[in-house]
Image 1 (tube, rainbow, N blue to C red):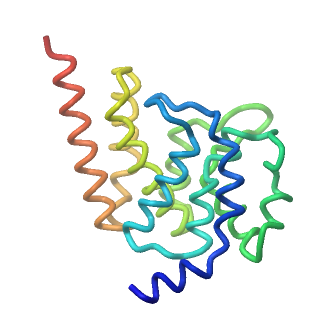
Image 2 (cartoon, one colour; image 1 turned 90 degrees about the vertical axis):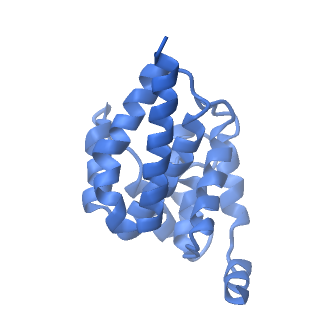
Length: 190
């Protein structure tokens, strides 16, 4: 525990938190905003005892380029110059960001398969923490079609790879999917 405190104490997190604050105005389907989701994702990583500085910093801004691109301070140059980890953080964030080529967004299924099949270990861990946070929030979403689609994506594209990445995160994801499916079924039954 002392090592954990020491390692966390030596990390430069504040500038990444500040960058994530660009997401405060970006609403989520479950209410709240994208900034809180970034903080939640980092909290999940810490809960699972991941203390890699690049992973934690990337978790704080993992949705920045999808949801705040074009805002002041949201650029490769701004991230890279934050600290000695800036380039690695930017690279990891880009690895878990949906790509756009010639104005066409990468299909969600291809994106998830890319990250889970060929992504770096850190990218896959970050995606699992992100998905856990999203599934927790999904309990507050009442758009049944969206919930059903999100659960199907998780079952098809995340769960088959999750256990290999982290068995404990896999168990939590599996439990969350079962819980959300049960809640969805109970809402759909007359």
